[in-house]
Each structure stands twice: as structure tokens, then as C-alpha cells.
Length: 378
Image 1 (spheres, rainbow, N blue to C red):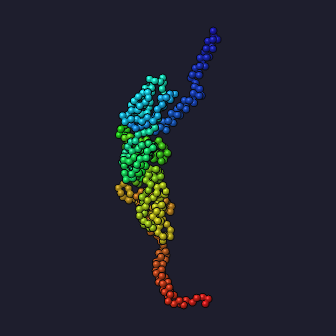
Image 2: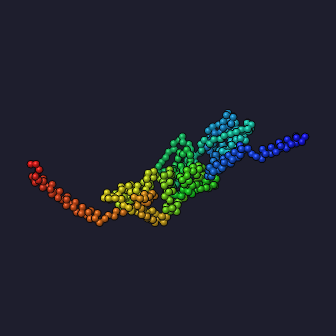
């Protein structure tokens, strides 16, 4: 009897150790689950919004292990319903995909024991999104994911025209609006939805800087996008401006005025996909005048602040090829030449007319007196 009690005591102690000390596999499972949860939280899009179904949306329903109940390409009718066999008409307008899944599972339980459903959103309905602020062409734009139909486009109508987009993203709308202005505040773009009464900010510079695609958002019906303007163009750092200028939603050309000691002064348009530096602006103006023996070491770059006052700084283009911004003014002064160079140029201006007169006299004399000069060898 004592032996049995001793064996039972040892067995209880052993079982308690098993329960209180998790196995290596259990520890790994706990750690992995924690890591997965952390990764999901880190990568989740804080601006993601649940899509609300509405008329003209197209969905497909798949029932696991019951293919006869599968139905594809169901278009939501104008009254907000879809026809699902054998359920009949089901109200889906205003519901999210998750809410519709819960509803259909409940309805299918009348025909199946434990129905498992997958709902796929095949095509979203066209909708109008509005954009205001520091964009070239503000207004309303109709977005659609239906790429099977070619919508007409009239370049004269800059707003309220239809844009075929496979993915109605915020960056796509910015491209459709002609791009954002260079002094736009891309770090505080505001998205407000008039239907859900929600509002949040988007930092598109994160996409350009770190490639965080999660900062780009899918647009929805009722969205109004406001692109704020920086208080002054001088607030735009050169580093951020270069990233902006090379993005898809920046204007193609950068207007710059070049004056002074250049061949063709005036307004020049630099291709943003190429070089947009001060030397590129000078080259677009035909370069320095032909009598320049060397490039000047002083070029004046003027840029307007928020009050319209020009702020000018001196640049040495030979050592500092700075990036120019829209509406910058580049002034190239006449090069400073030494006194001997100016004297030589003045003498050349005097000698050249005299040399021309002498050549004309000799030519006329030779015409009337061919024997004026002795030909050597005769």
C-alpha cells in the first residue's frame, strides 16, 4: 500500500512538472503567435477603411464544399439587393464584406449544416471624389475600376471627367488632377468622407521617402481630399523637393526664368524627369554668350517667399549645381574680365573695320589692274 502511495506521489509530481513547464514547441508557438501579432499591427494600414457595398458593385460568393451554391459576378441592383439562390433577394447596400458574410452564413444555415463562405469584391462602382487645394486642376473626378470600357476624355474639361483606374488610389487621383504644386504640404493631406463623417491625414512623403505603400489609401464614395499649401516655398527643403519632383504626381515641367549673360533669355521649362538644376536652366537658355572665355563664378538665384518678396542668394554653378524650383529667377551677370582683356577687345573692334576697308580696296584694285601684283615664277 505504501509503495502504491509512493508511486502515485511521484506520478503526481511528474504531471505537475509537465503542466507547469511548457514544452519547447509550446514556447515556440507562443513566441511565434506574438511575433505574428506584432507584425500585423506594425504593417496594418491605419488609414484602411471598410468598404460599404452599394448599387453597381459586383461580388462573387463561394461556398466551401458546396460548389452548387457558388455564384459569381453578382451585380448589386439599384435597390441595393442581390439575388442569391436559394435565398432570394438579400439586402447588401450599406454593409461591409464581413457583415454580408455573417448575414449569408446565418441564411445558409437553413440549407447547410455549417456553411463556410468566401465573398470576393470583383468590381467597385464608379464614384466621384473631390480634390481641392494645391493641385493644378482641382475639382470632381469620377473613378472606376472597370477597365473594360474606354471612357471619353476631353482635354478641355479639367474637372468632372471620368478616369479609368484599376485601383482608385489617392496617388492616382493626384496624377489625374494634373499633379500637386511644388509647395504643397504632402505630409498633411486631409481625407474627409461626407458619408461616414470620418477624417484623417495622409503622409505621402512616407511613400517617397521609405516606400511605405500603406500610406497610400483607396478612395471611397464621398471622399473629399484637401492638399494644403506650405506657408512659403522657402519651407520646401531641397531633399524633399527632389523626391517630389521625381514622383508620378508632380507636374512634368518646371518653369524657370533665366536672364542676363545667356544666349536666349526668358522663361524656360525644364523636364522634371531629367535634370532640374541651375546649370540645366542655363543650358536651356542656350548657355553663356559666345564671347565668354569661361563660366562665371557668380550666378544669382531668386525665389519668392510667402509675401511675394524675392529672396536672392549667390551661387557658384561650377561648384554648386543647386536644384531649381518652379518660378525661380536665375540671373547670370556679365563675366568680370581683366583690363588687358578689355583693351584687346577694344583694339579688335577698331582694327576689324580698318582691315575690312583694306581688303575691299585691294579687291577693287586687283579687279581694275590684274597686273598689280607680280606672280612669282613668271
